[in-house]
Amino acid sequence: MGCLLNLVVVITSLRARNVVYKEMQDKLLGFLVFIFFLWSLFSSLRGFMNLFHPVFTIEFVKVLNSLFMIFIFAVNLALGVERYFIVSKASDVERRNGMIAVGFTFFLFTILLIMGYLSLKSDSDAKTNLEVETEISTFFDILQPVILITFWCILILMTCAIYAGTYFVSKRLLEQSLVRRPELIPIYSRKVLGSSFVMGMSIFIAYAPMFIFTLLDSDQKLLAVDRAAKIRMQVANFFLAADVIITPCKLPTPSDIFSYNTQLLYYIFDQRQDKLS
Image 1 (cartoon, rainbow, N blue to C red):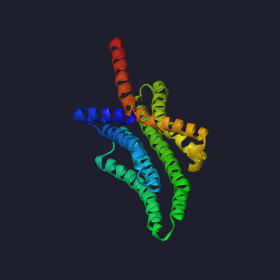
Image 2: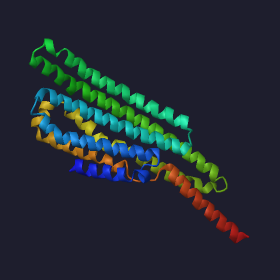
Image 3: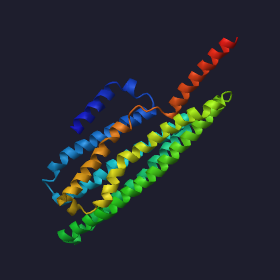
């Protein structure tokens, strides 16, 4: 069902791409939905993959799941960076360098995960199947959660820093525009703060359960037989799937709030000036 719904969104947006994908943040949101579609498609097909080579495909599934999460993290962080650039009116060079920095950071983590997996595979010829299975299981039961949790912690810190910067830039712009009405600055600053907080916390709400339960249920064999662990992972998957709803929703960005409130204040000021005159 998730695969079909994501496919409908992808097809609909592509048909209206000239209208939907005008800005960079719109393109990033479209790419995020496309990643979720690929992940849903792969999750639907992985049952058939297990019929061919159970040991390889189980670990291969873990690698691809990790890569999908890395891509989702990268797009979410890129969205935060793009929103900051919109508010700060950054130049094209600054935007390009910012996106390159985000891409390079997540590229390093991707290479680390893939190299760890391939290094174990390259030594498999000289070992028994049991030894290979034990090594691979140990790697993915211990190192994979560590890598992903490290990802998440870095992402949270970077996201908080980006949206904090967005808030302070927006607040400075508000102070400049409301120099004649300083009593209104705290009111609109709180609105900008609330918008930045909601957008920054969306990544935490969607992924915190997955990483918490990954720590609790790092033993994959226990996860296969423990009913409580299965329920926890289903809850985590629910919040994970909610990211496709939380992130693309049309929350007012600080720049949106600033633009709207500035126009409103100018209108009020002009009306009062007319009455005084």
